[in-house]
Image (cartoon, rainbow, N blue to C red; front, side, top):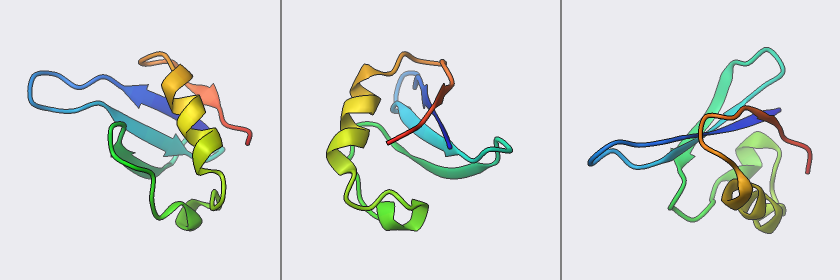
Length: 67
């Protein structure tokens, strides 16, 4: 799974994208909202680790997600 932070412009907020190994978009959520429904993506119980990864991400840099 891969993660990327997308920079918003003006009234559009920053977003996080989760993509699978074939780079197909599997999740798209606001970076400033609390993480919920992570069980859909197989990440339940890893909210704190994912929040730390999101805080450390640079905009526009694709990164392999391994939690």
